[in-house]
Length: 128
Image (tube, rainbow, N blue to C red; front, side, top):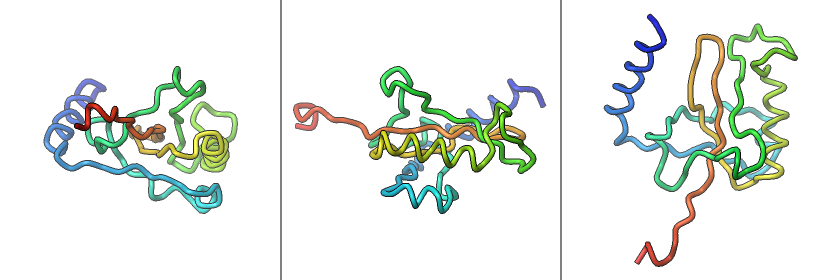
């Protein structure tokens, strides 16, 4: 199966499941992150609740997506972060952006992509 076929299957899945919106994992303390990130849901931008949007690296001023090894065989210093490296990066990010949430934005053969999401800001005039 090539990359294009995988992308087409993913798009078909998303179109079928966009009615089901997903809320991101939101942490209230760094200790919660240290205990584990097993609650981070898989959510493409199309599946994300209307109250959230993917964080933009240019607006946040630092990386907002992390590639994390999920095989268990990764080693420190590789392009995909090990789980302990990821936890430290996530805690560091969270201390600077405590209102942000997190979703798994993609899954590869040996890695997952975790993306920060930010609450949507609504203009009061639009709400009326």
